[in-house]
Structures are given as C-alpha cells and as structure tokens.
Length: 121
Image (spheres, helix red, strand yellow):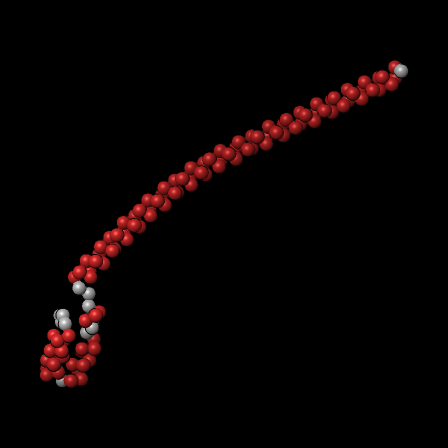
C-alpha cells in the first residue's frame, strides 16, 4: 500500500513499464487517493466514537424505559382517579335526588299547612 505521493509515483512508473501507459492509468484511477485512505488511528478514533454512541444509545434506552414505567404509573393513577370520579358522581346524583325529594316533601307539607289554614279561617 502506498503511503505518500512519491511512492505512488514510483508505483505508477513501474506499472507503465510492466503494463503499458493506458492499463497503468486505468489501474491507478481505481486506487484511492492518499486523502481517501484511512489510517489505523482513523479506525481507532471511529471505533471510539462508535463505542461512545453505543453508550449514549444505551443510556437513552434506559431513560425511555424509566419514562415508560412512569407513564404506566400515571395510567394506574388516572384509572383510580376515574373510579373515584365515578363514585363521586354517583354520590352527587344520590344526594341531589334526596334533596329534591326532601324539597318536594317540604313544599307539599307547606301547601297542606296553607290549605288547612285557609280552611280553618
């Protein structure tokens, strides 16, 4: 593998001797440029970045799991609240019914008193 421009030029010259100018040019065009070659340190840095990304993704997954657990807890609390609201509505409905019956009874009694007072006078 070539590591600098002078070695690349030597390779091209030798290819021209062995293969001829046109095949040597075609072959050199298929070789990556020096700027496109990855070094061992590039690969190690990429590995380090990938490991850091993996760790970040795992942390995010743990946070999502925690959020899911909190949401499940909220669902349970909301169900309990709905049950309490249902029982509250039932109690309110029963209390309203009793109040109306009491008021009707009171009004009937008052009407009876007024009628009786009218008859007695």
